[in-house]
Length: 401
Image 1: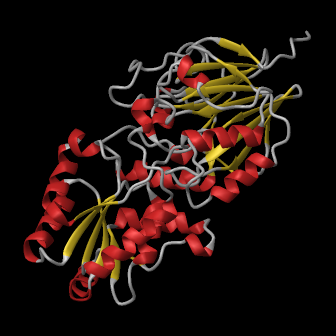
Image 2: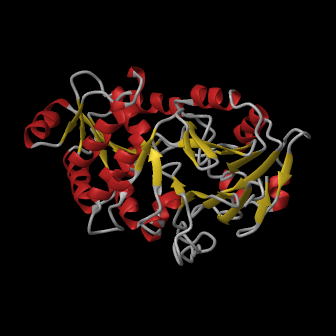
Image 3: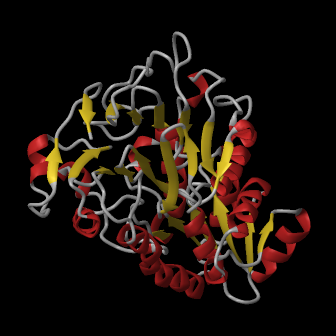
């Protein structure tokens, strides 16, 4: 029996909130989901997604595609029927597997080892759909955008991205070479006034001088950053001067090894060593750059150096500024540093100015903004070409492409 050759989109969550996003692209024959995240704490709808045929009821979904490994995009995969195939860029999947193995028994389940690996630029076919992962740049390494094609319609889902990272040129090249796009679904994290005020308009490259200057002034330089912020940690490692050591724990070391597998030489990490007893003994004599997180064991290490070498030690704070007041473990480390604290951070999300540029490059027929707390009127303030129609929607509402 002939079916209607229409492609539709439904935002299950994320139309008016940052995080916890889930987008469905479907026809009469096929259902595909793009991301299925957990909400950020205190942000919007906190209820677990209840999607018939995906998390409940008789299975009726042909695949779930993940743009990257941050929890607000993958956090509810645990609750999806195991019969539904999940797809992810191959190096991002390896990173996620290491993360899940490290956190095993503490948070969530280990499921990344069963995820299907995909490669950038290599389309895969699911019934009438063709899905192609495209180059992107976000604070999660190996993030991708997705081009979805069916029945002559072409949809771009950006995931989280930016145009101020190390791979700006590659992202712009991806966008320029797309051809006609019927619907562009883009993140809009930084549209809202309350968010954009906290976003420094810097680039990843602009942080390098801060790292270099820290090593000129201090013998022991700690970098407080998320373990998944691999671009920045690699950049930091390249600033460690000759004769000093670049140290991480074994978990971070493993992440950097996977990261370096698929990296141009200029962006690879440099001489990363894990914290063996031998390395630590040598490093204290010679000086080091050392990556830390906010857990108790790292707090003890940082405190020890600030107490024993107060003039020679500094902490580079490379995270969102709001964590200092929100997370007590983070504040503890910042307090240890006192006046020897250096702030060096840049957002993983596209700025409003660059969002307008991305839209101008793609020139989609229709534009839908999600992953945002901006109101419809806030979205209308974007400067976009008159040839692009801005589509407003709500969670759960169907949109015909």
